[in-house]
Image (cartoon, rainbow, N blue to C red; front, top):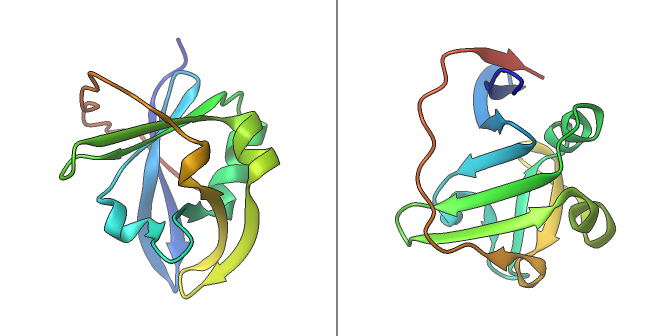
Length: 119
């Protein structure tokens, strides 16, 4: 299995954590309050992460709200076909309707990952 990586971007000159690349998945463990547009019920993330996923054999994304204990899974195909561009104060974003996600049962949190990559 390829080595896991903690992925960061830079926003306004500041390094910002955006997820973990583990196996063939990008895992985002964030309270949905910081990654969901509630008006449109869409998950969002930095578009650079999408570009990274397309170029690095990523097959799925897992969005985990550890506070609400809600865990969602989306294939990269569904993210590409059902998503759209947008802009937020944190830069160019990719938005995906939450309704297109599959709910995961029995999710376990991911381990700490020391190796970092800034995209």
